[in-house]
Amino acid sequence: MPDVRDLRSLIVEAAYALAEGPHPERARLDAEALCLHLSQRIDPERNRAWMLAHGKDPVEPSLGIALQGLVERRLLGEPMQYILGETEFYSLPFHVTPDVLIPRRETEHLVEWVISLAAHFAQLRIVDVGAGSGAISIALAHNLPQAELTAIDLSPATLEVARQNAARNNVGIRFLQGDLLAPVAGEQFEIVVSNPPYVPLTDRPSLSVEVRDHEPALALFAGDDGLEVYRRLIPQAFAMLVAGGFLALEIGYGQEPAIRDLLEKAGFAQIEFLPDLQGNARIACGKKLRD
Image 1: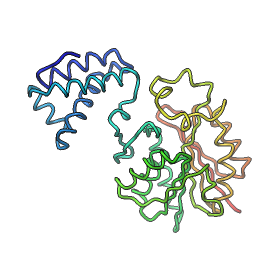
Image 2 (image 1 turned 30 degrees about the vertical axis):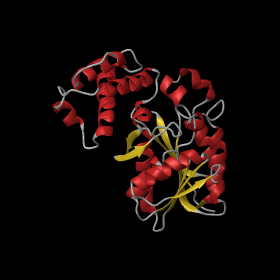
Image 3 (image 1 turned 90 degrees about the horizontal axis):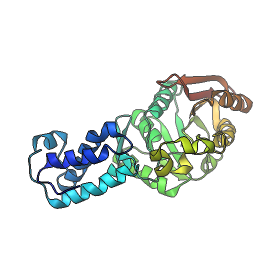
Image 4 (image 1 turned 90 degrees about the vertical axis):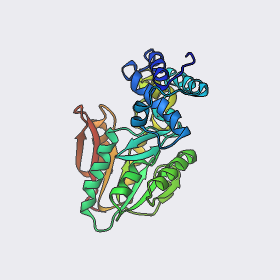
């Protein structure tokens, strides 16, 4: 990318380069986002409106060099969210690093479903298994201030990101490190919620370079059929739910029959599946009727 004299030219050059990247249809938007990200390091008050109004402003050569570095990362398939270190989930801001899965819009349906379940309980204890960035538990804590939230993850580095996000969003959550529900053995909950790893290892070659090469494998893959975590988590959850409690799960494409079977075998009743925007079963929910 050649040296440029003004901000607008810098963006044009970046967009031209990004048109050869994984998402050419977003080249201009990505170029603007990267340039704004670097500009905000100089002045955090700068926003998109500022950038549009100052397109002819001269820029330091160092900004062009820094932008070139970010563009090269994007061309290698690194997700924009990791490059920027930021994303949004359920209208809340989240810091993300390669230690955590990038929160998806589909997972917002899981949050909405759990919020609807909360009306069933006077006392509400919720545990989020596989907390990642903290997106689910933080969104729930923000919208259900009466609830006691616990978030569990296997990775200490992941939990550190989640703690930072909880502090940023001013919510109180108990974070615990460990495997599935082991850290809360002996406790009971009204709702267990999880977006566990569910991608079959056999699907890895078909994933986008952004997901396959940059997002944490521990948060994505679960054995050859994608059901490895569900087989362990579902019976654990049943044992730790109060009578009348719910298990709410995000599931992968085509997994509805297998998840239904696992839920039924564990003792869950009133099993429901909610579709995503493409009509595929995305959320699974089961109720524990009695101890």
